[in-house]
Amino acid sequence: MTPERIEELMVKVVDRVATPAEEEELMSALSGEPELQRELDAHRALKAVTDGWVDRLEADLAEDRHRRQPLTRIERRVGVSLAVVGTAVLGGGGLVTALLDESAPLWVRLGLGTLTAAVLVLLFAVVRWRLSVRESDPYTEVIR
Amino acid sequence: MSDAVSASADLVHRPGAALPAVTTDDLPGYRIVAVRGLVRGNTIRARHVGHDIMAAFKTLVGGEIAEYTKMMAEAREQSLDRMRAEAVARGANAIVGIRFTTSMIMQGSAEILVYGTAVVAEPIG
Image (cartoon, chains in turn cyan, orange):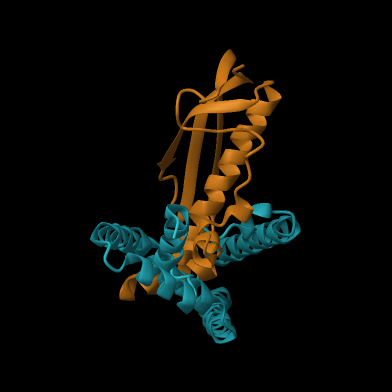
């Protein structure tokens, strides 16, 4: 067997893409060749070290897969929606109570009403802005 | 290249090969024939309150806060594009000596500033 063929088979075996026949072919060629066997072992050792980060990436992508699952999306949307509704109910209820409280001075009620109107207008403005630019914002596609 | 490497690198969203932008002070194989000056790009981005809520809960259990990873990545790519735009507007065809910096303007947002030197480079030989 030529040195080029041995090198080719070594690369395939180390990369775990060799067929059983190719692996058998290499092992036959290496039998009685301790120097070549040591070379193969060295390649495998190096591969084990450099492969580690790829294996970690595989595990890392589990986060992505989990995030894309329908159940995960539903959980998050339901949770956030409930949080928003709860905040709105608490804030709105407290505000209405304060506005209807006739024992409170008129200037307090007027101030609260004005502030509420201001918050609603500004909230509407940022939501409208975001909705108008969201489709044209290419950076929302960036993952990491 | 394995699928994991491709997915993790997210190269789809990282253009720029057309305008070399490097952290080194020179471009191997090229000769810098003109300096067009400092170019920079920056942005401050935030994610919506839903992501902030999720991020806050994730601090209870640990692990990567992907919501903010994505926010930083968006800010980084937008800043790079703005820097590239300035370089092109100055007539440069490459950027050398790029540096990134970040600061804290407001809670839950990412500010990225990227700067470098816009240059005109010609292939050697």
